[in-house]
Image (cartoon, rainbow, N blue to C red):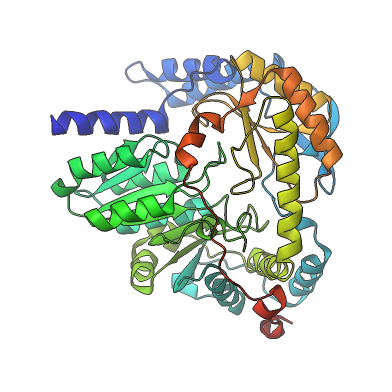
Length: 474
């Protein structure tokens, strides 16, 4: 019975990770591709050509809604061009630059000065060629920001997560994974050779049952979860995960890419909402921090193992010094203006939620306790969602369209930014109501009743920062 249960869990896991999208937008093209591959001694090149022909047909029909080219950009507003040549001036709510740090003049000036006086490329792996002072500065800044003992930069967030999984788990181990984890975590788990047991989204009672059932049969074990889930804006419960971890001898790994430098009293993401801390925290620097790259934070012993055995990060060129400097200056700027930036972003999120509530589309049960800039909506059919996307585009809004299996159902996600004006958000709420879309995350809110924001005392932003570390960069 145990073996059957495990096979079913792993089947669901592989299906979620690699299944053919059951989606009208991609179905024809994907069907042609897979049918071309299924004959014995088939030609993969011909299969790719079959996909390209079908894909181009779908483009001509106007279904491939994500194929946009940005032709102009002015702050948070952009002009986009579709495949048929049509252009639209829109508010850019598809990108995840939540704090709009890429638009701030002060860090841009520092970055321009850095570009004129320092190396711009690493060209080799850090383990081979070493790291530059700017890499050490950013690691130290993030370590202080998050309050972890050690942290390590990675080429990107995807690489960071895969390196962590590959280094810590192997065949004979088991990983317990939230069903809505990001594909970067899913791909990383598949690389380990470990068995994977999937638990329902945010259902920690079910997770405890599964851990009790399976844990004793394996060598090492871990719980892997997003911190903030990119499709829903929902958040993992670190305290619940920590309790299960302690009781059953597991390691906890949280990827907080959409919480880091975005939400919480100190903009530390999920860490600001719970007393417990995961053993390993990963994040991308390309969302709230508006930079590029990834980071892994952990205790020194755990990070040493990841650094020595996470070959995905070892065998790639180290993070570019230029984008490292960009992330460093952006993080310093965020921390220096933390109170104002957090207030501006929270105002936009709460205002939009209030506008949606007036139309029966409330996203959050209690926006005063937890409010994330992600707002995701779904419809009764994919055709409805595609039509809504086109309506929004024509009326000046670019969202992010996610067909299955990227999201559980066809979804449009809007990522609010600190500099988005409230009048535009009021117009967007009206358009969403007209489109008939509904909030994606509503069904999961009963599982988030325990969300609470800790209020630790902290120094003022001026006390937190000093400019002495900048001297080595000038």
